[in-house]
Image 1 (tube, rainbow, N blue to C red):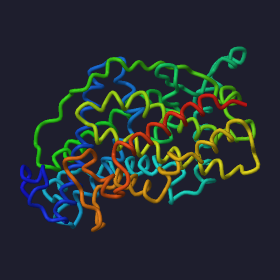
Image 2: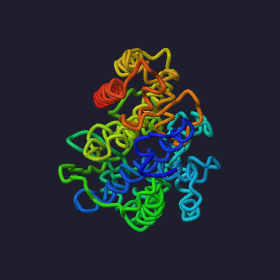
Image 3: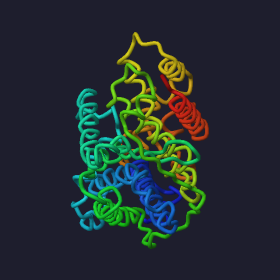
Image 4: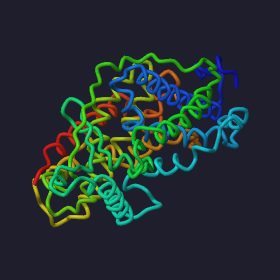
Length: 376
């Protein structure tokens, strides 16, 4: 398949067109991720947070991209690139990729995931408390909170769980562990960015100086006692905290990365919104007889038209095309001249990329506002 000719899709049969769209989506995502990392590194105030707050997106791209270029489909797989990939990133990538699914993870039950959050909190509590003299131990903290414009964009316990970082080792969250993981992803992304045979070196093109991240350190039990409903266990509150962080990252950080990367940034927001919405729906279903202000507000959003479209089988298909690159449905005919390569319209002719994007933005905003105000 000739790269230059394929950019427009002219002269390609449907199988070739689907293959080229898969490669194009992959290359767009990898170049977006690389640009975000490189541009973030040029902003000292933001660079420590790029890996912490956006890693699950980089992981998704590295994991799914590796599957795509190793595909036996001649229109998708690229053997010459596949041999360049180093499998050393596979374990940490697979862990974080599955966690990105939140409660949609088919490999773990709802109870399993909450038990793992409880264990992660215990590790942080043991690592960061009990070290000071007893008179001032009440001042010790075990939970780092990260904010942009006053909105929570991440918390240390869920982030460490997501990345497999060890709180007992000094510098793990900021030091060699995270640097090594980021380096591994960077190598994979550089390979994947060439999926459309564009061999230009990744470059920093984004303006990220306006992103200001601040941090607060708190005791998890005290902080979470004042968040959400008292009937919810602390480990579930940590999961909701992760959801809140992801939603606000999608609102307040991802739009700064959209310049030159419209489709990739859209996919990142779509995946975030879908899994946050799906997880919150699952949580609501666990408490059918609990009618607090927070849960009632959540059920109102879940029942709204935009949320219903996102969670519909059609919405799930668009989520799937935002995650998995190879596509085998003969009914899906991409349009390489449209945002997201025309896949929204190809999946549902009654929808447009613009209308679906509006649903994602609306639901993301409403959920973020609800969780911020969700108090006992």
